[in-house]
Length: 407
Image (tube, rainbow, N blue to C red; front, top):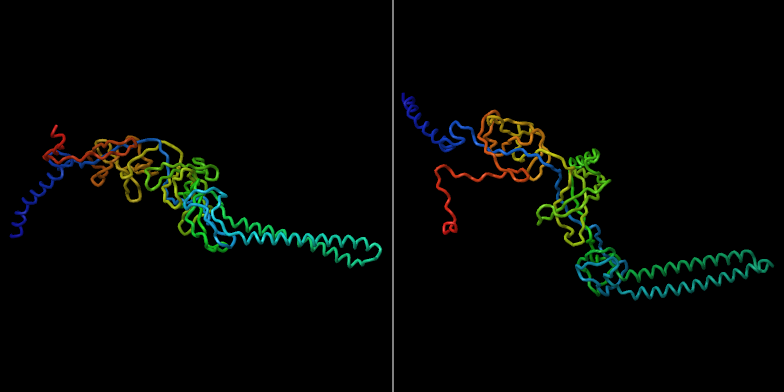
């Protein structure tokens, strides 16, 4: 008896609480009120001309990066450039003391003169012996020895001439010039330091007229582009230069135009990716090797596609679906095949242009149940513009700004 009387006393309290909850959710007579369809935000699917693209993160590198080293050993006489300046190919960078190399050139030139004199003498001896051999004044063995001496003297002349070329090269190498046009790094040695062949690195020179952007694409992306190239919907990277757009970390969008010029010949099995490279003009010096950049690679030709907001797509077990508002504001699920994501809009197959797609309030929409749709405005790309927040019923209007009140 006590349990039954307690239950009867709680029934009016539960009814009051349920009524209060209903008033808080929708309010009297408002959408989503007690017994009313829940409110949702909808926007029409749009059809427009689209062009698919893929985005990658790239690293900028110079086409030519040269570590300038000495090809002869000696003492640095002078540094002929300003650190960080642009130099042209062939301009002097360092000067090494060349006096020892010039002295070696003089020594080898003297050796050449002596070798030529010896060669001339050997030829004269051979000529006299060949005249005497006819009267048996000399033996045939002596003539053969003189012929061998002539050939040996001629070989000594050639060896001395080769040594002279090497000595002159040492004099030339004592003046270290820029191997390519570009921007220099800091000078790692100063005048008075002794350097050996190849050690240390005197400075680093990077070309600056162009810049490479290296990026890695996934295996699926690579297969997509190869299939498109075979189908003819886009040119092959080995047949034509695909346009590429690039933006730096402090830039909006992709303001720089370039082209693809290299795709590696194999995928990296460790990462299942393949290395690609785009080239950009850098005559204005806007790009520095080592910077990160965003790459936009055009993935298809232009075509007419139907787009819906990406957040409107949901999952039903193994299918991708969108919820449409049909006749009598009844929710209708529609399976779709999603495509490229462009500016927050997803290209889909399975929806017609103009059909109302539920964008916000998906948790309140159930297939086959009615809803109260609120049509949102869209921008020029078809993206829904959020509705301004509504004041709750009975709330006082927002106060006017002080400037407006004074007027």
